[in-house]
Amino acid sequence: MTPFDQEFWEDRYRSAHQHVWSGEPNRNLVTEVAGLRPGVALDAGTGEGADAIWLASQGWQVKAVDFSATALERAAARSSEVDWEQADLTTWTPEPAAYDLVSAQFIHLAGLSEVVPRLGTAVRPGGILLVVGHQRAEGHPFPELCYPAKEMAGWLDDGWEILIAGTRPGREPTRDDEVLKARRLS
Image (cartoon, rainbow, N blue to C red; front, top):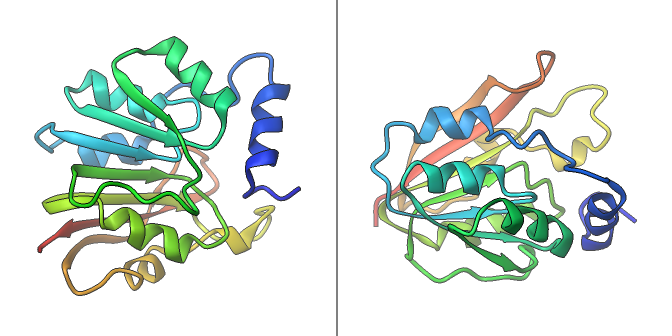
C-alpha cells in the first residue's frame, strides 16, 4: 500500500475510532476564501469534510469529492448541506466551468500534475483554483508527493492569473504550506 491509493486511505479511516483529522478547516483555505463572494464550490479530496462543511457555513453551495467511503460517511453525518460524492480524483473528471471555487487541500497523490489541470477545467471564468499542500521538507515521509506552488502554477495553461504561488504558514509550526491561488481568465 502507498499513501496515495484508495486502499491506504480507506484502511486509515476505518482504523480510526473517531476522526483522523482535527475537524477544523484548513487555515489557508479560510484566509484565501474569506474575501470571496460565496457561489458554487468543489472541495476535491474532502476527506472527512471539514473544509466543505466550513464553506457551506459561509454560504457556498458545495460539492465534495473523495475516494474513501468511510471518510464520506463521517462527513455526511456532520452535514447534510454538502453534496458528497465518492470518486477517485486520479480518474474523475469534474463538470467543466461549473464552479466559482475549486479547492484541493492536501491531496498528495501520484499524478498530481495531471489532477490539478483537470480540476482547473471545472473553474468558471473569473473563478478561483486554490491548491494547498505541505512544503517539501526534510523529514516528510513522502517528499515526492509535495510540490512547490510555483511548480504547480506551471501545470496550468495561459488562461490563468496566478495570484499566489508560494509558501504560507501551515497548521504545523515547523512546516509551511505551499499555496497556489489562481483566477481563471477565460
